[in-house]
Image 1: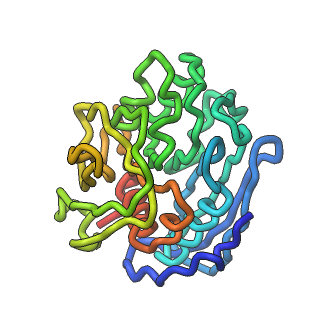
Image 2: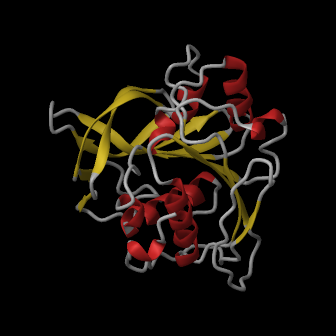
Length: 268
């Protein structure tokens, strides 16, 4: 696993409501938990389920960086990390065998990459708890997960439809909703580390773009940060997050923390 010390990043100074008491729980049959640093803290912990693995990315490093980001933001988190399914493009996770899989958690962060999984019943076992009210955060290749499925349930949950991306580059990000709680601390001018621009084919009706980047090939803008209302649940999403450099960037990580807090109703 790549160590976080190989990608130093600046301290994130955002004040939030909760204080870190980062612990990790997992089921040994399907979970690869990574211990986050422990601090004494006050307040009720945010119970976060991170679903991660699949094709094309350094998920161990990304998991550690997420945990450290919440720590640096002084957010009180209890982590459950499900790292299952291998490194291919198709998987059926044991987690979703339980119809009540989402009930123990305040929010589910989806950072998985399984483009060729198409089973409609399986996909709906994932989306229905979100539709019933479990908040979600969706990162990068989650947008291409289940992209070959014929049903739209996952795409409606994401808030966008995307099936491809353009080349890696350093993309300028234009803020569209500067007064949105997630974006109030976002820099007026920010350029990503090397990352991929996802082509957004469709924005679903309850999706609200927060920021966009422009294709270097076509000049067309594409949402890169957004919110979505899926049934009773808030969902926050970003298409960025391909590279370790992006997951070492304090602006990107701070936005993920704020998006998670917004999705759970804890951002003021």
